[in-house]
Length: 448
Image 1 (cartoon, one colour):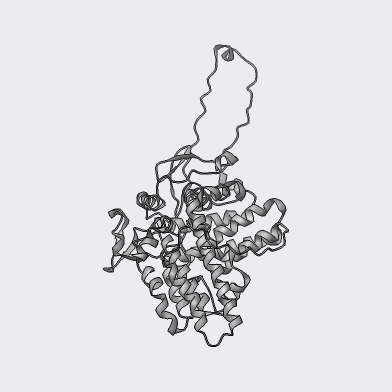
Image 2: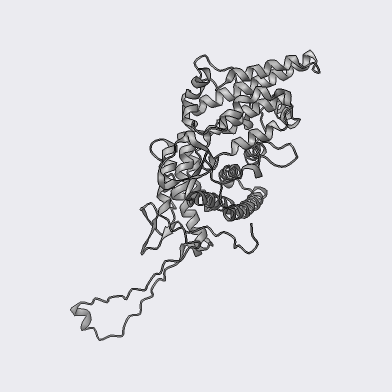
C-alpha cells in the first residue's frame, strides 16, 4: 500500500434529494433516523438468503463508484408566501415579528459528520435486515434493536458504522467471485456457475485499512463501556460484542479461527461474549452442561463417521494411559454431540447463530486440549471449519474457512493428515452452501 494514497473514506450510499434521503435501491426515507421501538425491527429479506445477497450486490452497481466522499444535499431557502386576508390588509397596527425555527442537521444532533450519519443509515436499512435474517426469527428481535440501543451506546454506534463500512466495501466491488480460470466474475453478468468459483474477491487495500482503523476505535470504545457499565446498558454491550465478532470474522487471516501463538482468535472473541454476559449481569460464570446424545431422528453431520474414527484413534496412542484415553475420548464425544445438537437447533430456527457459536458451549477440558494443540481436538476443529465453509455466501464469512483449515493443519502432526482429506476438499469448492447443510443434502451426498 503506497504512502501517498489517501485513506479510504466510505462513500455515501445515498443520492442527493430534496426533503428525503433516497437510497440506491430506490426507496425514500425521511431525513430523521428511526427513534421509536416500532421502527427498530426491519423485516428480513424474503426468499433464500443467498439470492437476496446477490440481488443486493447487483443493485449496488447503480451507485456512483467514482464518488469517494459524501456531500451535504443543497437545501435552498424557500421564500415564504405571506397570504393575508382582506381583514388583515385593513390592519394598520405594527407588524408582528414571528420567530422562525432554523433547520438542524441530524448529524449535528448526534455529534456525527455527514459520512458517519449516512453509514448509520446504511446499516439500519441495508445491513440490519441481512443480519436479522441470518440470526433467525428468534434472535432477530434483539439483533434488530440496534437503532434504539445505539442512541445510548457510542460503542454500538461505532460498531454499526464499522460493519457498514465493510458492507459498503463489498457492495462497491464490481466483482464478487474469483473463477478457476484466474478471472473475476463481474456482478453485472449475473450469478456465476458456482462449480467454477475458487474464492471471493478481497476488499481493496484502502477499504481494509479504513476498516482496521474503525475496528480499533470500536474496540477502544467498547472497552470503555465495559469498564463503566450500568444495568440499563447491558443489552447494548452484548449486541456490540456480536457486531465486533462479525467484523473480526471478515478480517480473515488477520484474526484466525484458532491461534496457537498467544494472539487473539475468533474462538476467544466468541467465548468472551459469554463472559461479558455473565459479568455485566452480575451472575456467576456457569459452565454449560454437556449436550446429551442426539435423538434418533436428528439430522447428522456430513462425514460424521470420520469424527467418530478420530475418537477411536485415541486408543492407538501408546503414550496415553488407559485412564487418559478414556478421559480424552469422553471429552471429544461431548463436543461431537454438541455439534450435532447445535446443527439441529439451527435447522429448527433456520439460522446460523447456534452452530457458529459452538465454542461458547465447550467444556473447559476441550478448551485445554485446543490450547495445548492436542491433535485429536484439532482434527475435530478442522472438520468444524469445513462445516462453517457452507456459510461462505455471507459476505462477512466469504472464503475465510479455507485459510483456517490450512492454518490448523500446520499444527497437526503429518501422520494424521490422511484423516483430513474431506475438510481439505470441501473448503476448495463453493458449489454448496448453508441450505445444503441445514437440509441434510450435504450429509446425503457424503454417504453416496
